[in-house]
Length: 112
Ligand SMILES: [Zn+2]
Image (tube, rainbow, N blue to C red; front, side, top):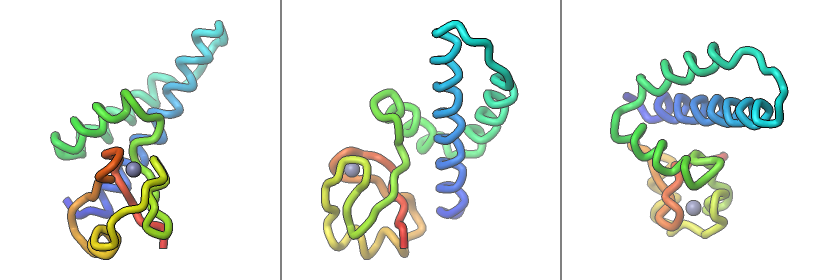
């Protein structure tokens, strides 16, 4: 799969997971919620499109971080705010593989 598609799926998956988490929190507070099944179904369909290793890493990281896929701005990971080595910045934009922050492990995408 090409990187931009895989990244797009990852970011969408993350958005849905954040929405599902908010729904779960509302339910815990006793509010009635709607649309949870639809969201969950869409989420599962997206997850199936990812390569198993990427999905596995995503699931593992999402236990620790609210956002697992984060932007890079001026060579800084906006997940942990550590500056990336210049070589990563240069390759990360061009390369066809997904990049992860060497410090926090989050998936990266470049804002340019
Ligand atoms: Zn990081």
